[in-house]
Length: 114
Length: 118
Image: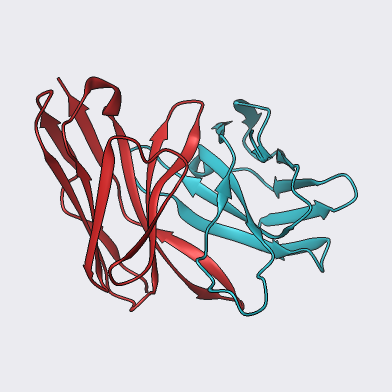
């Protein structure tokens, strides 16, 4: 079974703090993703990575950065947390299922920025 | 511009009846579609998928139908059970371009919250 783990289930941070969200997958997947989920907006892609040290912006990258130093680990960084970054953050990695890429998600990190 | 749309934010059905969740897309380059199920405080889990070369795919109580001409897909759950109560996301993947790297990127809809009443 594919396993995607996220370092924290719940986090509370103060405005202006630097926040690190860690994600690890154990399936040797090339591709990894960070999303945020907000009510009525679905899953919005923040950043993705298709190889070590390679990254691309998603639909809403502003205020975020990422790091992928090792294939199994993909980190999301909030350089200076703001209240509008309060959200559920979901990490995914993708691998082949039935011949096409399928994304597998971690349990999510619910972040509250005060 | 929302390329994948789930126009019903919520749906309520009685246990044992059919649940039908709908999804529309605008990009004709999408050729692979997936449904995910998400419980509160958990990550989405893959449910079922369909390729554009098919118009139906079935897995137990779950069936996905694809109407390419209408750019519409639907997920049918029969019979519905209280444990099916969750948020359902549809997602679409564009055609792989020969020679390009496959990033596995998906475009998600906004989600539909299904409540199955006992």
